[in-house]
Amino acid sequence: MLAVAAGFLFGQMTLPSESVEQKPTNFDFLYVDSTQPEPEPAVIQKPDPLPNFPLDEADSLFVIVNKQRPLDPIDYTPETVVVESEFLDNSREIELAPIAAEAMIEMGKAAVDEGIGKLKLNSGFRSFEYQSELFIAKIEQYGEAEALERSAKAGHSEHQTGLAIDVSKPSEGCEIMQCFGNTEAGIWVSENAWRFGYIVRYELDQTPITGYTYEPWHLRFVGKELAEEYHQGEYKTLEEFWGLPAAADYLVSLE
Image (spheres, rainbow, N blue to C red):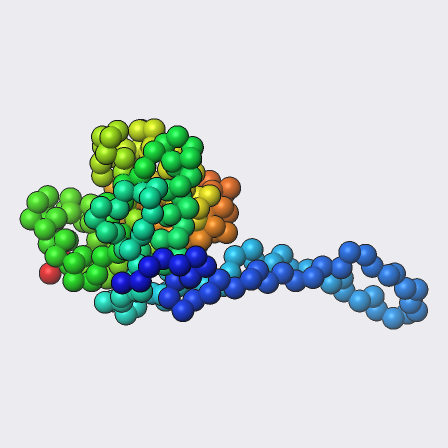
């Protein structure tokens, strides 16, 4: 297990600097022979404001994993570190990808500084094997239909990427419950997570798109650039943000 080091990014991936096409600030208009065809005006493409991380690769910061988009490879295991901070309750020794852990430490400090108090980390990275056991346990607890809206099959969970974290504030109650969204901490998380590169992944009334019930405690790290654009655009799901199909159900039913 590694200790979190400032500036250490997810896996071997480094965040590329924004590539911005240089736009002309003025034009020199020349007199030309009127018999010659006029040149077509230059078309300046708006530069993409986001780094070019793929959506389909398991080790990508922008990877989209849902019920119809399994990780590739399906048993992918990222590099992870224990999230260590005096500003967070991590008594469970939750692990995240280094870049996500660094951002969570920053978010935890801000929560304390802004009067919210310590956030508790309830779940972070989960291996393929652990997620498989968890999903089976959910089926036994709730039945298949409800389990499918509460948990992910192994290989289809954001937790397996090391970029997802479940948070709570036990002193306010509603630990890993939907009512967390109505607590002071839950409201703060919803309104401020984007500042640190996180989004609330499974928002209210988005089950037909995400396939999961409302989880105000489940945060997904996407980086500050994407999180800000997501927030400013008032998006509710990553599927909508990227123009991907809804993923309410698995393409292959359980056997």
